[in-house]
Length: 286
Image (cartoon, rainbow, N blue to C red; front, side, top):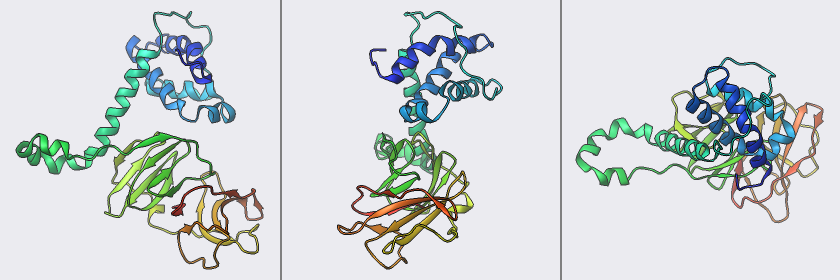
């Protein structure tokens, strides 16, 4: 790969072992390369964080095996020295193919909810109907500066991506992604890569307001605005020192006040508040 980033160097070094490891377990040649390319593409988002916080060889090999339909082997790293590096068998073309397939799935996911009702319109209106279909939401790679998912100014901020979603009425974190309800009543599932598709299965938390425990560590002028439970235990609290009325469910920026997210692992133990930077409108945690 021409790119000499840390991710590109990892791909160059591990591509033969990842592909060879699958082939040695009976996975067909093309299937092995596509499974590896899709796993690498998914891992590219937030790569620096993954290298810092995860055992990349273990996590990536588990994802590759799952995509190839092989049984899980928890804790097993990528095999080493399985194949010599072959310049004629590089990852570039397969990464392009994997990106194309993912883009296609994203487009199909957005359109799936309207296809059934639009069959007659397709037959009668043809190209005019097709051109009027919604395009997939814009997605960009961006590390979340806050320790929790949040929504502001028409954008949903997940761990490694920002997804443009307008008119969101409520959302709740679900695994590594989120489930969103629009003001129209439509419910969408957003995965960790930013792919969006309609869903009929909404988590109970989407329609309930959580009841947090008492919060320690608030300053004299801090107002508790919103709280959400964390998947690994504890709570994240949105606080604002620019106003005194905590009844609103969104925080408006103030030139004199501060908005911050406070993570409390227990009732009596909280991390240092993380100041919210940017966001000229409202900010929500749910």
